[in-house]
Length: 317
Length: 317
Image (cartoon, rainbow over all chains, first blue to last red; front, side, top):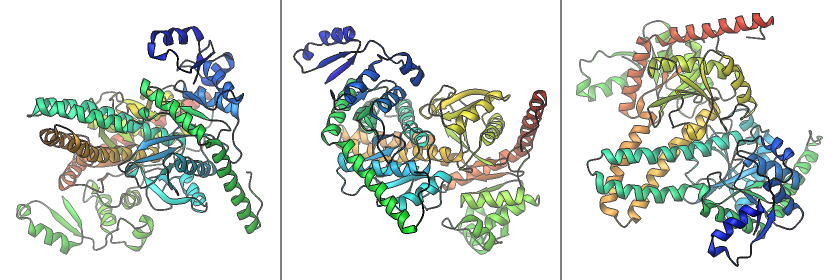
């Protein structure tokens, strides 16, 4: 583990923590920090020694195998994008968030990196999401669904209807549209959507869990069996919240970059940071980027063959 | 109350219910039904005597003041659209759903009627949502927010960024972007979004509540204080679920039609149906359609003045 940031502050923190002594932690000094309220591109231009930029540089130079950051998501995205470049076959790196379902886990992609998408982007998200699910969910043949307002093909906005056709024509195990209310039912391993919708879906979930927690407290206080019931419920909901809190599960990788970047939640606990670093380490060991490159290359080759069979010229891509 | 549908089936149901005897309920025969799995426009064309079409006709003819249906949402939308037409100043009728927040209630518009929107549609949703909030939430000056991925102006996709500028220039009390995780916090009275995003946001909420209920049962069973705690929790969560279940709150009006149509949730209970009919009745008494017409006309007049001041011709609208 290499910690990148203001060296004096990191040394002070490490010195305050006796259990850190002797751990194989190295340190790279980066005096600048991108604050959460800064415009990321402007901040990165003005601060060449910003920690996230220096950390991405360490990976690009081969001195580290993956970047993890729980700081400014946009800054991490742009720093990694500039340092690594993107894989052929995807114009857009996408954020893949693993979230809990009734039966296990599922992956939402894109969770917020691309707010305006075209149908071909959603196809690439499906290809990359399936590849990631094979590694992390141990699926042999991940079930890929498309987030929409109805299960039937043809339900959705223009983007979704076109993306549906492309996913259906791909070699993916495409199970069709998935309604938002079935997101947690466990019927799909990978849920594809544009980043705007993905961000809204995840954040609605977060906000609702917080609201339910507060309301349960009020309900319990007003209940006739208040004392014992309230205590039991707070304990139980606390366990449940940890179970469903994807922030605790460690980081979410950016799929589609030619290097490995893992993004942590802005409100990560120490445990979440540890889990995020572990995630980055495991994805590096599993050679995620090489496997994504191969998956995208396979999809591109299939697209070329299909177009040749149809005797048409490729459009744009 | 006028019940519209297959007369023999309605009479049989009424006869089975002794408390219905003597109630001021009239009956209009409509032998056909649009099934949930039918394409709505095709079904309405093939079935001129479909119940929702006949019911919309009753309102258009002035024999009823509002239409309520918990059947096929798309069929209700198109039947009402064809029978009533739309108000000037809005190209698109929008579904306005009232949902619970930590401090009271808020209105989400559009909750699914328009899956592809332009910025001017979102402005009209804000104008109509504010008018509806004045009536149903008793707000003097409803706080209107725009659902996006960040609070700052400029955060969002192309649609949201343009809609933000239009809302900011309108006479509405526009509080800017609202993040999805703050949806239930109570900071806004009206949340504006396109129908695709709105549908996803609401349905994620529904799905998560169902998943939490199931998980709480599992957690409670596994807890050391299982017996008493589980019972208390199930009771408490049941109350909470009824509190947050917007399906129970009665219907959601389509704002922007020149007649009143209220849509019930597909999984409405008898109580929800009663509440939906009550909602329709109250909105008719409050003269919602006339007030929406005036609000849209005011917005149009302001738009004309602004364009005249700028010395420009109106584009399109």
